[in-house]
Image 1: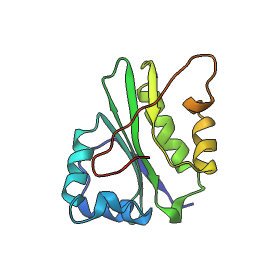
Image 2 (image 1 turned 180 degrees about the vertical axis):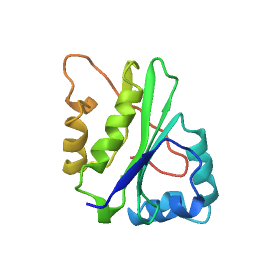
Image 3 (image 1 turned 120 degrees about the horizontal axis):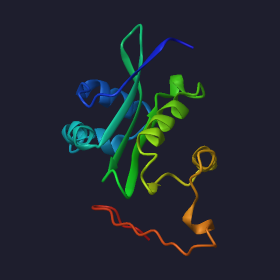
Length: 149
């Protein structure tokens, strides 16, 4: 594994962000309509942690959270360039986020319905609301420009 550096800085070059988000196929963030808003999303986040490949100074991972710092923390993005996945870097990012917001009561995220994501988040204590029986919870969502059915 190449040497990496963790940074806690929202000032990330747009091209570095675009390269990372494109590497994982998150084109909704990088298409012509959204690309300028990506940097705003990073700046407006409560907490941003990133991982850089030290030698080339290349952004290879990022996580960001939005929170009121009391009752709710929303993990918005966590991504690792595919060339650097399966090396524990995602774990490092999520641990940083959970440590930063350990005092916050509720932590939420939305993710794809894939087993690897489910297993990853469950390993940190996240629960899928559809599997919770003791407390009845529902999750509701609205998304602009997306028909949810």
